[in-house]
Amino acid sequence: MYGTNPKEVEKSKKIFALFISSSQEIVFDPRTDEAAKATFSEVFSHLVKFLQYMMLNGIYFSWISAYEFHPFGVVAARDGYISSPSNIICLRQLANNFSIALLYQLLLTFFGEGLVAISSILTGLRFRKMMENPVFTSASPSDFWGQKWNLVIHENLKRGVYKPVRKRFSRNVAMVSSFVASGIFHEWILLVIYFRNYSECQDIRPCYKPVLGGALSFFAWNAVLVFLEYATGGVSIMPKFAAALPRFFAQPAGCVSRPSAGARLHETVHRRASFSRFSGGAAHISKSFLTLLQHDTIIFRFFNHCQYVQRVKGISVFAKFVSHLS
Image (cartoon, rainbow, N blue to C red; front, top):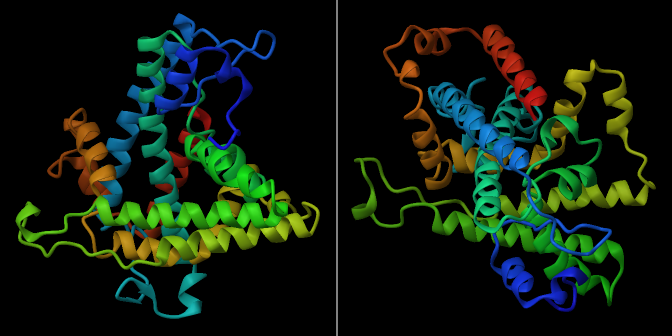
């Protein structure tokens, strides 16, 4: 793509075809420049993690969906927009942001592990993980987006947008262009994952019509954060703030504070919709393996009636478990 593909893929038509058609990133051996072979233990590990995250998604989705994806209360909003700047940075909204970020991480990791396992079984090759536990291990905005979160999309944007633009313009222009392209891509996603016609809906509720602009503003905000990180030579307030916090709370605090503009996206997607085909489908698949957590069980009723303090404790324990698992 624009001469930005890895040099290893040009050595063989077979590898080039696999590289272009694969949904995952092929890992190449740096010593031989050949596609690395997947071992049985690696494939088995991905399958085990796939099943583990399937279970975790079912548990977490069962809990968070009981609160309409607002486990810490609904912040006043109008037509998908946060009603005032103070609501964007309020503790309840930040806690809701974190809960949704964790949900997305669980879903993407679940799908990623499954895709890597299937791809390795079919081709015998090793593939890169989609997620690197970004919510809990990211040290900065650039580390979050560049090294940890959805590495499949990252690599495609890097080859398709960043590198071609970088050939003619500065690093900052290339970086902003990548975020804008990602924002437009996510706006397009909102148009295709929801039911457009009433005849497609499975219930009597109106079909959801997404409020466009939220995804683009979210990625524009993150472009600003990365730009500020570059402008200060990598010196950021967040690492200093995180250093003063207990280790478990440091990375989540950084993750939650970054997408404050994403609060509007959170409201747009989760306040008025029945979530999406993507996440909803994943949850229904995983929930089928968790008959213990149906609506009439003691466990579900416990989560459904616990107070805010108990919810914070519950999500903290769950998040810590996910962090160690990843």
